[in-house]
Image (cartoon, rainbow, N blue to C red):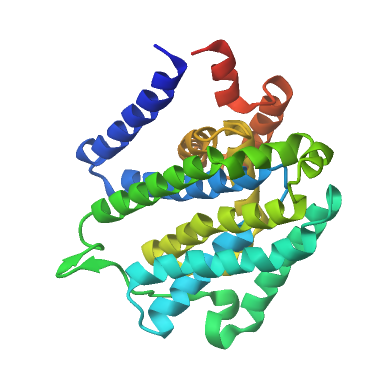
Length: 315
């Protein structure tokens, strides 16, 4: 089988399997884990667009997710906007937040990008905490309106509807990323990542590319945040927390930076792995240490991630 055929058939086969999962896994809890994995898959794969394909270490990527969470929550609960629309509004506001973050860091390098983007994430969390009359402050927002289609309620079908919405958003996000990566713009991102001076000599504006890639990486991350809020019917400041950020980053690095499907596969694996470890006495907290050790081992033994290792072995 040629490489091109494999690159098409393997993802399609995986998608077919995921589409059939609810027919076998009828328990709400199992479907819930898949839904959370789909959300993390969107977050991690879009983070990989800026980190793996452009080399921008944006430590504020979860800010886009948090902005999407609160946008959807406020839109649906406070303003009564249809939850289906509120989810996509999360992508719009996240893209705007990304533009605000990207503008001052476009010309920065190295640790300065990390520090400034992390500072923005902390600023966003403090803003949420301080505006308690709108965001609910430290207690967050609860009882956010749920999704429905006519008389069909998504809260009474054992999470079947939410499963397919989450899978659909993951597919749309992946198609979006593939379109960006395979476009001339996507090729210019790799030039900025690998040889910045050469890219500039060829007329590529490095600062413009960095701004655009951060904005593009924020769109579906914000949509995932909006879906997260509508699905769980909760919005809390924990979405800006370091634990969520560390887990998403682990998915990017373990799956493989610069790959399209690696972070998605890692999101599925780590979501179920961490949940399984949580059920083992004594490992409730240690599970995150185990994930951190796994990330270190992968970076040491397979810098390109597990998917990169499989590609080198032609598996």
